[in-house]
Each structure stands twice: as structure tokens, then as C-alpha cells.
Amino acid sequence: EAQVTQNPRYLITVTGKKLTVTCSQNMNHEYMSWYRQDPGLGLRQIYYSMNVEVTDKGDVPEGYKVSRKEKRNFPLILESPSPNQTSLYFCASSWEGTDNSPLHFGNGTRLTVT
Amino acid sequence: GNSVTQMEGPVTLSEEAFLTINCTYTATGYPSLFWYVQYPGEGLQLLLKATKADDKGSNKGFEATYRKETTSFHLEKGSVQVSDSAVYFCALSDGAAGNKLTFGGGTRVLVKP
Image (cartoon, rainbow over all chains, first blue to last red; front, side):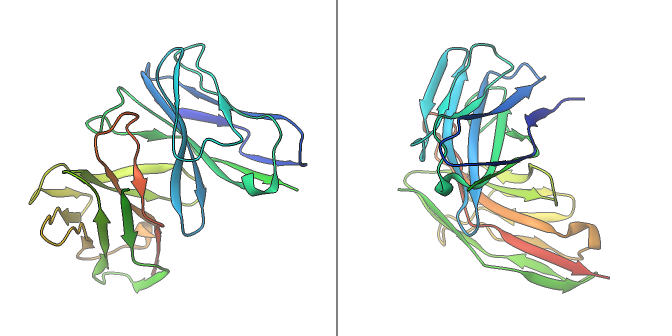
């Protein structure tokens, strides 16, 4: 089954404790992206990757890192999480980074930072 | 910058009622417009899209028409079902690098039997 898999689904952590949210897709997609969803704000792009070893900032990259060492994986790293990073995070992928290629979303990771 | 404004919810309807969710946008150039749907506990799924003025996107009984003159992309369905209960997001893409979608805040729809 074609899918985007995120782990974990739920995560509670404390300020300053490094964490990684994994994202993997099995569709051989070139493009991957991370969004965060906050009430009333919709989804905002954090980082994106057009291909292996190519990453770039979205609208809200502060406090996050990503890497794209393999085509299928695009982990999101929070080196020193803070409470304002409490949010619902979505990974997405598509064949290419254009609006002709629909995004496939994972089921989300709900992060709480205390 | 780009922005998308959609009506706040929740919208509560009875089954078989008519649904309209308003969406207006601000963007430079000629963006592509999308509606995404998010069912409880799931990620977003593309519902429909339109890429140029006067295009109508449709899927699963939902429709939306790209109106450049009013910068709008309102979502409609003639007869909703309980299974249509979800959060609906209007979004645009201006074709810039990164395939970034600019989303509205989402509208929660609850359909009661």
C-alpha cells in the first residue's frame, strides 16, 4: 500500500531534550516536506526537499533541522525543543515539487513540549 | 505574501443538507487552488483542485469553481452525508520553488444523522 509513515504518532517531551520524528514514503517520490498544523493557522511549511541531499527552508524553519540522505526518508529533528513547538506535524511527499503533483500526507505526529 | 481565508467553523448540518464553505485568497500571479480534507486522526487528502480561472474542480459530489474576479474558490456539496464530517482546508500554490501550499485555517464540518 502506497503511504507516508510517520513515527511516533504521539510524543510528550521536556524542553531542551533532542528528538527526531521519522518520515518514510514507499512511493519513490522525489519531493518531501514537513508542515506543522496549529489551530486557526492551517498548515505551515517547515522544510522541504526536492531530492536526495537537497533541502531548503519553508516559512517556519526556526528550531528545526532536516536531512535527506535517502530518497524514502526525511526525518525532522528538534535539537532543543521549546513549548512553542507543541503542535501537530505532518510529513508529505509527491512525485515532483510542482503543483501538478498532488501531495500525499502522513497521519501526523502530535508533539507536546512541557 | 500569499494568504487564504476561509470561514470559521464549526459548521453543523443535518444529513442531506447543502454545504457551502467560503474561501478567498490573495496571491500574485495565477495560483493553483486546492481543497484538502482531513478525517479524524488522519492526514490531509486532496479533494479537488483547479489550476486556472473558471476551472471547476469536482470529486465525491463536491465542487469548487476558480473565480479570479472575486478571488474565491468556494466549496459546495448538494447533499451531505455523515461520512463527510471532517475538517476542510482551502489552499493555494503559486508555483514557486518548494511546491509550498498556503493553507487557510480549516473549517470543521459536522453532519448529524
